[in-house]
Image (cartoon, rainbow, N blue to C red; front, side):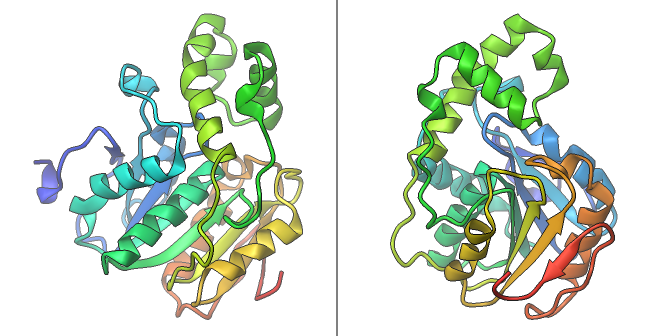
Length: 267
């Protein structure tokens, strides 16, 4: 067992334990991403929120672990790994593919009467918006070009061709998982959803972001930030403010975070 009685798991990383925290934020990385992507956020929220991040197989210290290329199987396994972390109110934050995984894990918890207090869905269209991409079928060079164009890739990978190509199986597996995902009809959460987007992110349309409102009975809020698909990297102070503000408010309320615009229902 780890500190606080939490079960140790290859799936969970905790970079800054926060004794006495009143809530826990579980972070879900993007396709090809790792838990360390959220380390800056964990440090920024230290003292206020206990932050844990999900570590997918096939990367970093999990390089040898079997890959998963299905969102349902990912969500089933992550939900099981998080079962020992429900002693605090849970808030989920997912970016890109991670937003869909956070949604699916929240659905599984909801079916088990485990409450998720809030979902922050970042850089992704709603689950019901059909994804017609087929990046996972591209050749290695084309796949690497696609990743470089999006940004967000660890710079150490980009300058080390051998390391980058070694990471390709996990990247391709993640892309297959999200590109073959189909949301079950009528999938709806009973917690509020805050949708975060980058103003210059060509991957998430206004309509795609607005469609998240179909997936909750507790209200949707929208926050737009300067930047592209990986706006999180440049907007950490504003996003930190938004998270702490939203967590301290009633579900139907929202306030302006510095550097962002926040709108109500309907975008």
